[in-house]
Length: 254
Image (cartoon, rainbow, N blue to C red; front, side, top):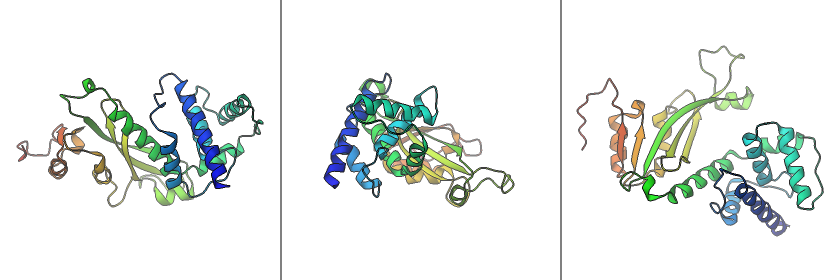
């Protein structure tokens, strides 16, 4: 049974990669192998059944939904039906409930791993001329996102104190390391908007493993701190930050 599911997943992976290869502007073909995607699924997805909206099909439909001009779940399901018919398979129901439920089941870790692994491989394959004097430049930056007001989101990502209870939205803070060479996300940390160890510096410390010796880290003045620069120097990386107005401009690093 399990071997049958893995074979079906392999077929879905190849179909997904072929679809990306035929889509202009999405250089995913030959980046992630079917084996690497399967390995990530095995590690990040606790269990999955042999169903129409498997994690890969759901992810494919979700990407299609985000990238399309329509952005509707109905249109995403219609594309899944079209692909099934093109492969000689029976069409699934046009009701988008199964797709929406499958999208909610999609593990965050699975999506994050695929994003970071794709970004890492594209960064490694980037042209030497895209680097600065042969060195990789990596951007660091943070932002916040609001999410649906559900009890689960409120528990993990509380809303700002300035919003009255029941009329606000949960907010998460994100910090990413991005390749300047090709614009891909190399790593990302997500945490609550407020609370202990939830600032951008704290989140960045969680993903410092994606910074290598010889890298140049580029960020805005928020990241200009003695502590962070010292940590980067211990990793063998240099930093380019606009100096914060409250700091002494004579840094003891060189």
